[in-house]
Length: 182
Image (cartoon, rainbow, N blue to C red; front, side, top):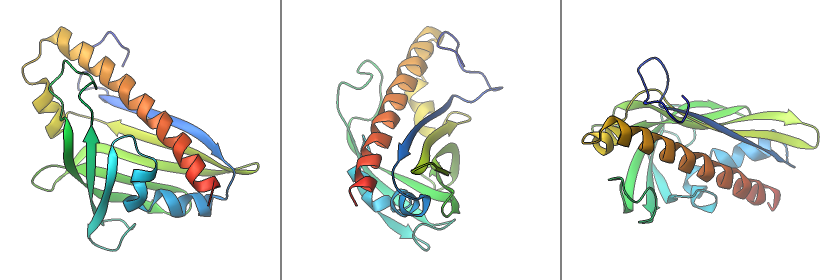
């Protein structure tokens, strides 16, 4: 999607990835990115959380994340502000190559909103890619955009996409520091 289009059903709402080189082995990097309770050490919004079901870090395990967003983030749009929680289910756990999770609805169903990391051996360490794909509107996006005109939706998706990309870039830089300092 380019910045002037309203998303349509034929393409994802968001499909974003950022990459960083980490001077540690894929095994070392994987052990950190798959430890979701530590995500407060690198995430822009997640302040911590806990595993609530299943074996931590394995497919099917469920994680409740505690989050915080400031009032100035896409300030004109009705996004969640302050503290809130999310629930996610691990959908890929392939040490040391891939770790991903899908966001769940309030009722506990997986949504087409998947976050994760792909790791590839690289000279001197690991190429770490952080990715996010939202194929269709989630519960939250549906609520946020419900009363918006097409122009407001265009503006929201453009601003939200830029915010997510910026957050993800900051996240991988912090992850790099966390992993390389361990």
